[in-house]
Length: 149
Image 1: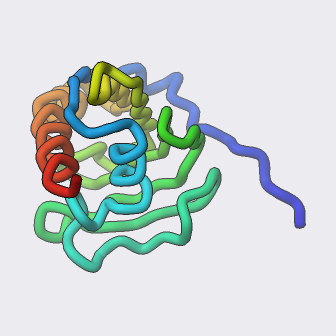
Image 2: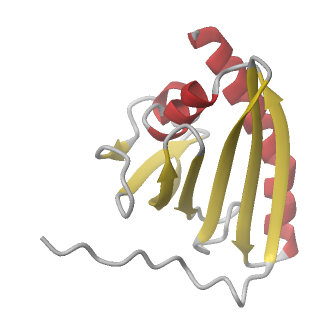
């Protein structure tokens, strides 16, 4: 079976990006698992996640926040270290632009240093909305990961 080459989206006309850092109590492997296989436990609306096993070039779909659709595909996966996906949402989100979300996990004491980068926003307003919301999303992940341990 031929495997199609991974083609990240062209972000050259959408230069708006953000980064968020957070120290979390959970281990890198727990956070990686929750960001790949267990979206339905902490972020997605219950029962809405549609995807096969996370793998490079595999697609995913879910709704969050009461039905807002999120689409994407896995670009890079380094178990317990990095997850990179495309991320597409509609009005009030990425405005239909295919963005790239990268989350890096590094051991930090008994927990994890998380670096989230999100690139390819169509405008500053979309970036700013995400810059406001990602810290709360990471706090929710941290809380749910701690409860799962």
